[in-house]
Amino acid sequence: VPNAAALFKGSDVVELNSLNYKQWRADHPEAMVLFYSPSCPHCVKAAPMYKEAAREAKKLMLPPFAAVNCGRNQEVCGGQAKGVPTLRFFSSSSWDPNAGTFYGPRTAVALVQFVQLKAKTRSIPE
Image 1: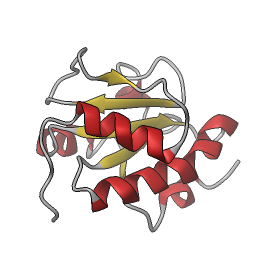
Image 2: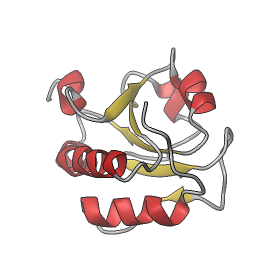
Image 3: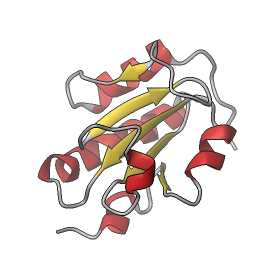
């Protein structure tokens, strides 16, 4: 099992947990969130693609990318992800059924295009 902290360390992906999830989501009404488990091979395989997409999205001033380790934060993942990995775009402080889950090809280009289609606003670099 890979070290969960190492999956997104040094990347543009914000690691969320039960302590910071609600506040971060309130501060970022539009965001792409990966719900994952470090013990899930598909999740580990998706991590480099997700980091690349996050880097590209930041360059394009798109909404931020975050990730939640569901193995450690079940109270966050329970209502948001039926399984892992789940890639979900949020467009308001609550779940927006018009935004939704990404089912496209697991490539950085496809994910960035999805976010470009869903995003209503461009974020301002911090």
